[in-house]
Length: 594
Image 1: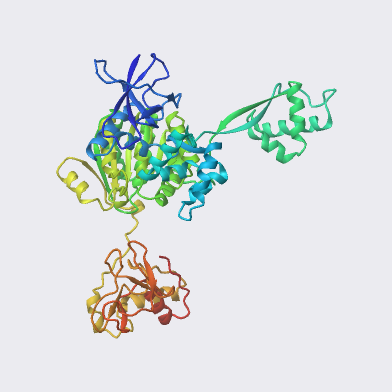
Image 2: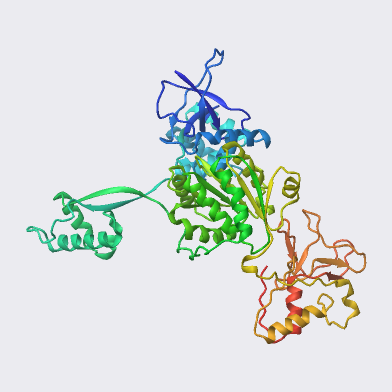
């Protein structure tokens, strides 16, 4: 009997100890277990063997092994432990958040009514105050796990169910829910002998046609495995022919795992530049030795927009791959992941894996398995990709490290950028933080010597930076501008751009038509009932909306405080800007995005 240290997917502060009848090679850290926790069964994650020692407690046995191979490498366990300790979050819940969704099993209960129960409970339904679920139980003969979970939250109904079970009116059966994320497989055909002729005597015309199609597809796919559905789509008679061909041992029918492709259409190709700038070479001269020597060194790549930070990422990743190590690239938003994805795909092809919330549950599971199996050496993703199961990362890159999107704001709250620095330290590799406008924390660390600074001060090919004019809007009332929120400089620039047939973009950080509705009699603003913040007027929809919780009311209202009808809008948003631009430039095509 051996003892195992297990982190359970439940709000339990410490790890738990379970027993296993005998030593087994299948017990590897990182696999999932089904373990008893109180009166239910939950998913647990094996962290290792517990040290032997005498105990007065009874050690419960694990119920089942859910995996044959680990879902995360053993060297990530210290990373999970650190996060659980620092962020005061249960270790099992940390691991559950790290893994792809749909991998948690749990015990479920269903309630079945007995023959004696039908008679006894039928009398209860005659009472008009009888709950609807009793009638459902009698009609269907059982209650679903979801309905039972809701009933068990009430102490009254939990006691009633247990009493009815003791009296023999119902049976409460327990089952284990299966994982929702599973490998995708498909049935395929492989010819027994590729050089065998389709003109063999005794073959039916349908069999000859099926074999001919099979060989055509093999030649086109450069693979001996052809999906059965592809053959059936090309020839409707292939289904029966395949069975008879398999009986004659001319083909073999087997099932193989296939990976769901998250890329869709192949990303655009970006060629490698002929030469690097002097600043890029200097940055790489400092970065590449740290990758080669497997040293933890945090770098700040402080480069202005268009200075070639992406090419530095690519060359550094190329060095890590040459050393047979992997690369993790974090981006703040999925849209930025798509941009970097095209650059990395152009350079490294199928070695690339994606991890972000834009993937389906099945695609994310397949990407996770590709990374864990070592088939993908480069991972690009948003903040949750910090948990990518890379065995030996040689470089971690955090693009646009200043972005607030790296902060996870619910459940397990963490700062993805800081966790990237921590993981690099624990796994012995450099971390590269790239930004044109570094965060104050990172900039302070770079000026005090905690981080090494790599600077890119010039744009590629000496391209000039865009010209920026700052206009003081407090002075626009001194001009004869028709609209108080447009300066004359802006109007002139818009007019000139329109005359040249070009496009303009105007940014404003306020949605809606007006940012505030206020009573002219008492001065009270119209506020959200839940958040106590001012409601924003959306004139096109005729509503007042709270941008914090989504609460809405009609815009035609009277003052909630004094009942006056003199409620007027104050301020402006994108709708009012659009309306004003339409009056100023009636022939211009204007689109609003918010």
